[in-house]
Every structure is written in structure tokens, then in C-alpha cells.
Amino acid sequence: MYTLFASIARLFSSAPAGADYPQQLMEEAGARFGRNPLQAAELRQAASAWLRVVR
Image 1 (tube, one colour):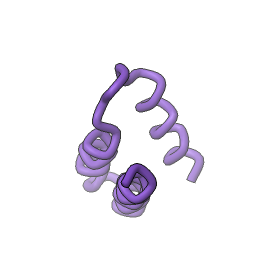
Image 2 (tube, rainbow, N blue to C red):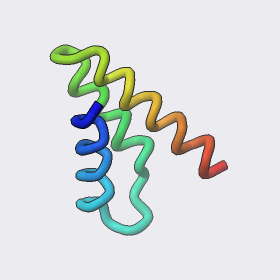
Image 3 (cartoon, rainbow, N blue to C red):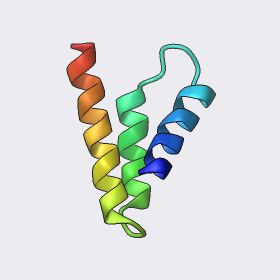
């Protein structure tokens, strides 16, 4: 779970203003799917949660 939060924090700290955070989270989830499917699912959930908050 810590790695999930670390990944999200890294995305927010390195992304320029107006970046598409859900897209970045989904891309990261796709990259991690082969190594850690559980973490990929957590990143997808984080992207979905972001979209619910923004809307």
C-alpha cells in the first residue's frame, strides 16, 4: 500500500500544472500489471476515485 501512495505522490510532484492525473495513473497501472496485478488494480481504483472527486 505504501508503494501505491509513493507512486501517486511521485506523479503529483513531477507533473506540470493541468496534467491528466487519471491518465497517468492508468498508464502506471498498465506498466505494473505484469509485475504486480494487485498494485495495478489499486492504481486503477485511485484513478477512478480522482475522477469521482473532480466531477
